[in-house]
Amino acid sequence: MSIILYLFYAVLIVSTCRVLIRLFLSIAYNLTRIKKKIKVFPKISIIVPAFNESKTIKKCIKSLQNSDYPNYEIIIVDDGSNDDTFKVVSQFEGVKVFRQKNQGKPVALNNGISQSSGEIVLTVDADTELDKDALKSIANRFAHNSKLGAIAGNVKVKREPTILNTIQSAEYATGINLVRKGQSVLGTVMIVPGPIAALKKEIIKKVGLFSDDTFAEDFDMTIKILKKGFKIEYEEGSLAYTDAPKNTEDLIKQRRRWYRGMIQVLDKHKDMYFTPKYGVAGLVGIPNLWFDTITPFINIGFLFVTILTWMITKDFTVSLIGILIYLGISLILNIIGLSLEPKSEKRNYLALPLLLFYNMFLDGIRIMSLTEESVNILMDWEKPKR
Image (tube, rainbow, N blue to C red):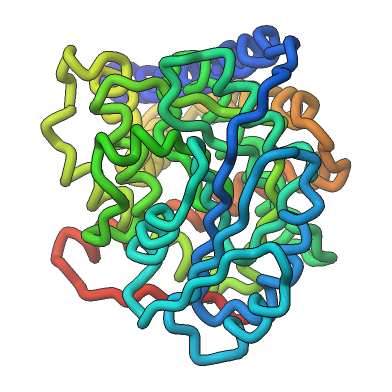
């Protein structure tokens, strides 16, 4: 009985410590904001790969053209679309448009980079709209740290009047962006996201272009930059609003691609695990991502140990108090995380209680993805319904 109790508390303490560390680092991020503004504006090449995005890319390009930045170019690479994507983008003046046969997003990005003239490359998904100040915030952060190889922007969910959309909005703010704040303090943001990823062009050439051997080309590029010893930070002032899956089916497809891509990249770069020469990324970043990958199994084990504790001790109080403490700390973390977000939405606070059940659903997708990847089940890149 005592062994079970010790195991219960061990899991609870580890989980609580991770939450508290995230809270500490996220607050530290906000206390070290860059206040000095740049006066010289390096050229930024915005590259938008597009495949069958005729319904979304018009708004994307308009948001880019409305940018409050004096020195940038827009490059659209049509990846062999069979809808009106090429026709739509060709109507815009001042936009470079290239067409290739369908070869996938990484190849489209690489072709866009080859046609770019900026010293900073910014990749933007075709279903994403940028805030007008996004480019200035990115250039400003690069200017104040010469060791930076890339910057992750602040991805937010385009608002829609649905419960699923609200939950995903809260998840992005409290889960994804909050984690990136903590990683940024250590200079090791582990994933520079496709919707808004800023990279120095010279460093892209040093580490090699985007690869198409995983489902997560953005994660793979991030790891390659970290392996070369460059820092990667998060810029919360660079806002990008992206389309989120509108139904459960599309959400499952998206997360399967994310999670399987993550496992593929982790396996591809397994030489980094606990390797001191890769610094914080090798000693903390990669192991922490593997911990996230197996977290669903830990959660199941935690639930099993909790039930076993109740059955043996006949006392619900001890374990219930521990769980409530953990949930309370997590809730406080999420509330603080939302309050620190720029342009935070009140609806996200209302969605916080639902995140507990939503995360259990995501755990199920993680388990499915890990199982599929382990037995090498084939999976195609599936686009969400528009």
